[in-house]
Length: 310
Length: 280
Image 1: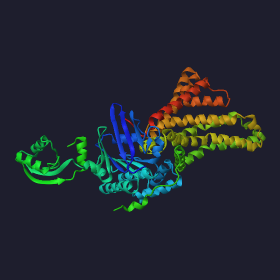
Image 2: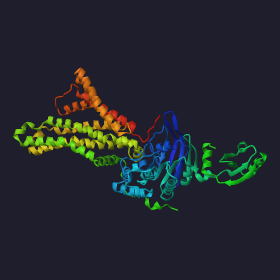
Image 3: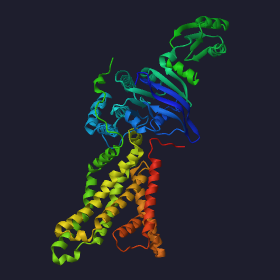
Image 4: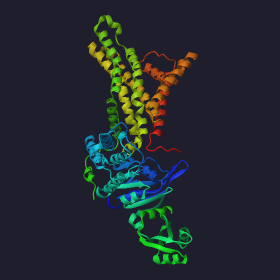
């Protein structure tokens, strides 16, 4: 498979739970490498992953994973993918190394190889010293790590990680993100990271698919999505009528403006006019510009624009 | 800067078993887990006491002329399997109640079903765990008794005179075990608590038996035995061993009741064993 060939494709996929449409006519492509599946809670990210694993049968549409049809070859697909679920999940009554080795055997590895891989991946995820402890006694952060270990034990070509940093402390979160990044960029494992946390996706992924209300809001390489067709400025003003009035004035002039905190705002000026247009509008509104700095757009800007959040 | 754990992960280049064998992994792991429990080993040993008693009976009947009245016949084997029902019950509750319930409590189903195994394989693997132990206290000792009879008597005469016994033991044991194990698995899939499942199963057995007892007490008619799971199995057992039945209930009705029980269990398992639980 060529480097940037898609590992997952969805074509017109609709998933319905009772009266609720969890996915609505979703068409998306996930290229090889690390791809973020980004969106607020309830956007349909987990539903999409579960549909790709064959847990949910869509009412319409077609899905391919690693070149295989999800509807007709689910077992062949699952032999080559790993899944780290969002919520706490383990097989009860086992210690960590037995659990991970068991998962390896379930995935088709011979018992001796599965046990050897279990030791290796437990060291890799940072649970080497705790591998003989019962999984039930693990902390939340350790449970996240062991979920990653069981997803990796059979050396999948693609791993679905559903909210991998859920409930982790800052240090553990950084380590988990480092692991995910390492997997995708150094170990040749394709990764799809579902998260509502923008920094997590921005740190670990090269591409992003932004979901909102069961639809794909935007998708593409993060760097190209962050390329503005205009300029972004960080702006602080002193306005006689308050900053809100000035924000309204900017919007009325066709500029995108997101107030951040206090009197600081991020303003997207389309076209080539740049700061000159901002100064003109400020002068017209009798507003003092106290601070103006060109800003690099973040994934947050892309996300906010895609889902229509200010 | 690459992480310190960088050396711990490498790509796997060894062999992989094609999908279709995961049920045996589940079965082996489940059997290993249960036989590592002392209480369960104790229960298994206890369940073999009737076998020891029957072995002594066969020994006495074949070795001592005074004990010839103890000579084994088809009825003895049928009675032996009926005696084992009490152990069948306890082992079913001990080994079966948590088989799916604990997986549900720990959200393990999504781990299992994200691996290359089908729901059928998962259920079959779990069924094999329970069935192995149930056959270990029914079919295995009954067949061993047959072998012991041949050994102690030093001839195949009894075996040849009762050629139907081995198939009868086999067919009845398997019907009993499949019915009991599928009912327990279905109940285990209905809850996250193995204790609750144990209570449910006990209720199913005793309530159906008590209901039949009341109905029989009032009507003196055992044709309504189909409402009791033990009565149905006993009726089928009597027919398979070619013994006069204790029930007016027809063997066809009893068989239909058992088949229906297995079908209902299958439908429940199909609905409940899923990688995701949708609450509408």
